[in-house]
Image (cartoon, rainbow, N blue to C red; front, side):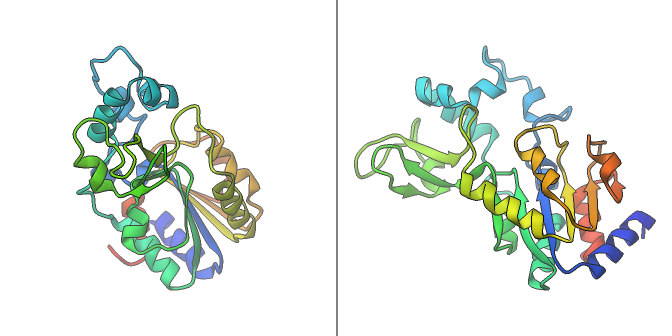
Length: 245
């Protein structure tokens, strides 16, 4: 085992209140592309006159709902994706009583699918969708199976994915829960995120515990503050550290 992964395993064994904070890199091994890497969504040839940020903005959803859902269904929803060893390893740590919370920037629902229960979804989830008129909720299949813009089967209102679009604020209850979890943690493991998207990236500033661990393929602005930095695939590292690989 790599010495750094061995060190991570030691930290996990010694910790009693671990919190994991993850980004898009957590799900790339499950076949879901991230946003900012060379192969990420933002660097794909989209052949459109709008930037990817504009395509997932509140304004675009309101003005061009058909184009919004074309992009959303093609690039942001992956119904066939399965949890990888990062998701599974974290769920195992929660079951063992070590991990107290998962905080994620992802919208894919894979942490819950792997078995994690205490998950703070900063940017919402594609698994939940609601009517903008009457508030009725719909699942992922209803949206994906709809032709064009999905509409409510009760009132005919447009259905919106329960995800945080550009120009929209984060849910204060989710943020407060995530902050409290980080403040109470003795170990914070940050993985699969470049820590450049705010306000989410600022959450690690609330950590006052013993061990800050950063796992990411590339360097992050917080590397100098970490007790342990591992530049490798998060699924591989967590899988090895939790005995799945």
